[in-house]
Image 1 (cartoon, rainbow, N blue to C red):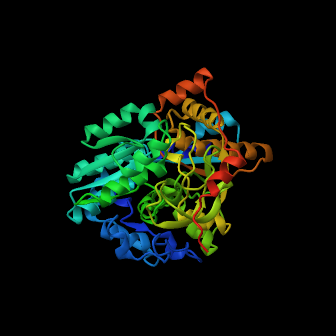
Image 2: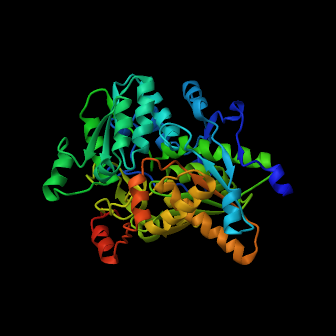
Image 3: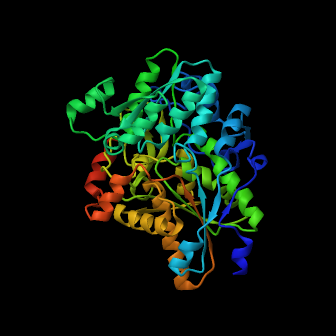
Length: 458
């Protein structure tokens, strides 16, 4: 009981404690991720070669592996202060229900209209677009959280926005579309007939339910063919993990105030934005040998890029128009099943996280959809927050680790990222509650077919 009187259920930092710099983990990595390649020349891509697609300052951040700390622009900080700092929470009720000696903490990123961590990078990317004098941006969105966040940021900075939303999510989550349109974004179901890439995919497969890779292809095509527009991405890229480091930096400050340090850090993994942001300072400690936390990435069994993918150069989009990245991938042509964790339906993984996993700094597990929602429901009942399906992958792993502590009697400190809320995912919760939810795991044959399309890079 004395422990509970010292540590609050929710710890909010003061506004003055919001970090004023992002942290670039690459500056402390012993080995850098392999360079992105120009698909036309096969050579490492240069910053100017990224300018047709990205804002110039974002292109610089993408390739900068030396600057350890990057100043957060004042206009970005002012917007952060509307919803940050986000709380670090202790899951006392869940701990009690599980009967575990473990201490479970979670960093809750859902206290904003987008309902997720995505706003951290959306504000930054919209700011740089406005700073460059652009007219608008194009992007993709899976579950809709990124599209919602970017719509908010674009509206604030007076920018047009075109969002290609993965078709199955477009159909499952119509109210996400409604929010984006409230902020004046144009939302198009992907694959669509508005781009060459989309038309080609629909001609081959008229019932294609879409993927993040396909939506990226469409958004990039529109950006590079529309004057005054640039493409922005909500995950995977180095620049995005830089912006999302605000999550881990705040978490580190809060845990220091409590005299705590995590034994295990857990995050859901699709493209890597949330996971990369949460683990940044703890991975730094691990790389430097100062501490040795276990760091666990949790992905859907239906789209298992880390646990069953290949570490290889691949395109970041299905239309094969983007630079080639060395990452864990299922192949750009991989078609994930229509599970409800739309934000995790991506064929690849952040090059930074892929390199860290490949070098043994990180673990990865995959979990099935029904087990994920079982954990989500338990968490909602005892912690009063309805979690997003993506976040619930981390909850599943955190519960599993806490139950291991119950078996062994170890009093470990577990930290996970609660990336957002699930209030637009009620179709999924309804299917879980009525017993109609199913699991899909790709066969080895399915994956081999996709791997066969990987580019031949020596």
